[in-house]
Amino acid sequence: MAYAGAAMGIAGGGAAAAAAAASSSIKQVKLERESELRIEVANDTPLRLRLLNGTAEIFGTELPPEMWLNFPPRLKFAVFTWYGATIEMDGATETDYTADETPMVSYVNVHAVLDGRRKLAKASSSSAADSTQQGPRVIVVGPTDSGKSTLCRMLLSWAAKGAWKPTFVDLDIGQGSITSPGCIAATPIELPIDPVEGISLDMPLVYFYGHTTPSQNVDLYKALVKELAQILEKQFTGNAESRASGMVINTMGWIEGVGYELLLHAIDTFNANVILVLGQEKLFSMLRDVLRSKPNVDVVKLQKSGGVVSRNAKFRQKSRSYKIREYFYGIANDLSPHSNIANFSDLLIYRVGGGPQAPRSALPIGADPVANPLRVTPVNIDRDLLHVVLAVSYAQEPDQIVSSNVAGFIYITDIDLQRRKVTYLSPTAGDLPSKYLVMGTLTWLET
Image (cartoon, rainbow, N blue to C red):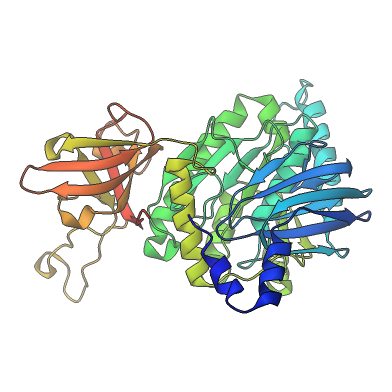
């Protein structure tokens, strides 16, 4: 894409042009100890960055010395140093500034406590006396834009650096840190998370909810959280290393009313024993009071980073669109998805929830018809499927769709009603791994 913003800036006069030129030139930034460089990459051009001297990290992952890293447009991140560093940047940024007030000391102190608990769990599980000792199950909660996913990333990378293999659980269907939005997912983290590429998708366990807010179908959201938790519990039972390493669970920013109920449901379902509350005193107080009776559960209040910025609904929608595009094309546009054509008869598409209501005549007097939130109903193929993202389910039968994880996603690019053909984008060529496809309200307009 062309750098559309440049022309607008230059039109403002010579000073604006000089500023634009300066913002895209190579520059060095010297960071003092325990400070960070906060960066927002320009909207249309990438940024190169390298560590010239000292040591520094991005969200818990150390930067390699003198190696250029290429960050795609629109990415927001911070380079933090414990002991001092010099950073060199080449490219345009929307903003970049240094900050010496960060909550990093409190974050790394939390990591140290978690590390101690992992060691205790490992020592206990190796003895015959107690082979069920659990490592820390950390759930990070807080309002929208409080830095939850960033803190999760730090805790995971620091743990992986210490040779642990924590499981990352992402319950934030609005954005999606592991895979496409509209999903809850989990994956083991065996190495510090790549500063550019993000989380490796070698072995993700993904359940498709299909919407970007739980209010679309609260019962389905709860059911999928329960399914995911049960699978992880089975894996932990047979794997002492995973059990001792524990979990780090990311949550949504919806923390009031039904959102608060879903937080409590997640805490209970995953048997979380460390609750980290970011940036809200009221939520901390409520959780501390309601969990006071639970043995061995710690509720900890943490300050949110000053680098966290509020994002409006339009920005979130754009972020979701970029995330879906990234699934098919890669973060650096380095993947080549395939366009495939299938007959209507080759695809069996279902949606969960809703479905036909029972007629009033079949209900008790005075009762209102209620749709079954977990009912699986077939979807007719028509033009309404255009631009819809569908999940490819591992289910063997339609009634297994709710309890089955998914293999991946396809994107409907054309519907030919006359020829009864569907054209879709898929990450790979060849037949789909399953004929059962699941539809929600997740759409994407490829640009």
